[in-house]
Length: 328
Image (cartoon, rainbow, N blue to C red; front, top):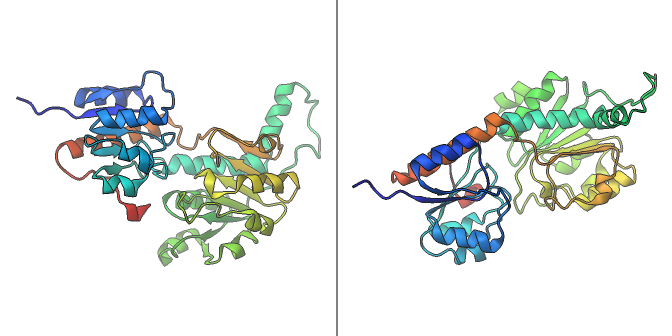
């Protein structure tokens, strides 16, 4: 007799090709409505599944894991970030956590550059003006922004995505600076002609553009707080395609409203979909609905990594993208 197939619960809709392959390999419960699960629904899903496939919208804390029972053995996250999962509590209960690293690096770096250009060149303002039908033709002083060539880009977090951003920014003629937990290998620094700043305070006060590319951890929460935002040059721009919690969003809103910053481009927000309406009203702010990884190719690759993690686990081996608490 064939071995009993793993029971897998998927919390949100995934690309059709991924869902089809999951049905072929496992006993799968798919999400027909693609609606965010409540805490109670997530706990119930963990009680009846061998494997849970959540995503960034599913916050799984210690109290929920305590109610999960003994059946759950693997959380195969659809996405690279796992700050929404209490990885330490999961491991203490014998539940492995896997993710999908490296898949969205290029897509997120592309979006970072798009936001830098959108804010500095006032693209959304121009687009809105054209859509309003009010445009009367070219004018010498209309919609003047700033060029990015020759400007200093400060990258906060020089991992895979930070380096991909640096590679693109160099092609635009930007000067690369970075702050990281550890200084990069000299060969990597040489590739980008990058300048390392051990002091984040010193870096932010000198940059024209700050790009947030670090994960959300207890040590990075509000890393860009009111004090550091006040250090920035009044014409400086902040772009965030990582995690909203890294920036104190209320402090950022106050700085922008006071004219203490040149602008911001945000793809992620501190409180998820609950965005400060005063921030939304700023003309020099570009807000996107967490689109950094939203390419067909990237989302399919994420699903393929999830499939490999589950299949490897089902075969009795360690998932290739296993997350351990020390990594978080």
